Length: 323
Ligand code: HEM
Image (cartoon, rainbow, N blue to C red; front, side):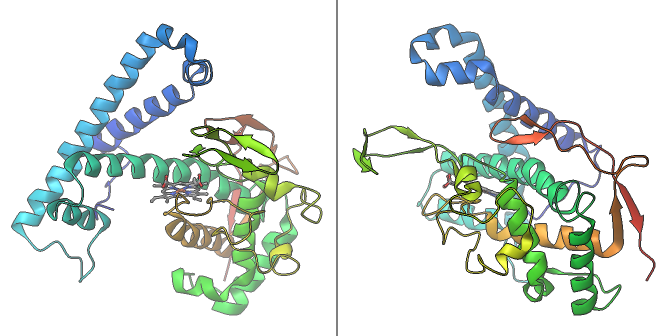
């Protein structure tokens, strides 16, 4: 987004951002957040909690402003902002501000929003998906035959040892199916993001008063035994056979890993290729195995802010392949 990267995991700015994002995430999952949201009469008792939320919000916004927005603006005033003719996302957002289409606060909140949505879904949920997809529950450690089938596809289409890049992913239907199946069985954001209907509505005979908080159980829609064949199985083949027309962009209301409609995930077009290349590279280059002495990885889950997470993190064995 800013055409920048941290040089190492010890970069002081990276460490500050990580700590602040961790604190934001902790506050958002706290018991206070839940009871204040669902039992409004108890909100007056939340003053201490809300004060900390306010402080964290101010610190994060200041950091985004000082270290990202101002630096980008400075750079833009001293040299051309293009990277071989390609502008990065923030340049378009700043351009909209210059044209008066949005104001400075809007810019700051877009950066904040993408930071939460992109890194949370990417770092946590996408990491889960990577682990699920190639590791413990998916095409890997607990499903050796799927891992092997994927490796065969990669070797046949690319040739052994030729590293997968984004354009290749369009010629790898099984890899695409593995990612889809991972997002179905281990949906990253199972209840999507809360929505609100502006007007009174009726759905399946139920009245929904205006301004209700609406949660969509997307995980159940994608795992409903009445609508999917053996949904409890990790079976990528379903997306090449009976569900071959189903895409992750919301073209089928049984499968909404990125939501649907105007408020659906704008980042999924970035996330899907990243997931495919990450999973592809891992399976191409390594045989993924359970820790020594174990024949499976324990996949028990625990609750998280929006989704379930793996309870016990395991170190899996990545055995390099000889080409
Ligand atoms: C595997 C990765 C990802 C998954 C599964 C995912 C999933 C979702 C879901 C389910 C929603 C809510 C949609 C709804 O309620 O209808 C959402 C919203 C959003 N996502 Fe993602 N996301 C991913 C990655 C990303 C990335 C990489 C970015 C940004 C670079 C991003 C940016 C956003 C934003 C800004 C929203 C809010 C959209 C709005 O409210 O209008 N996401 N995402």
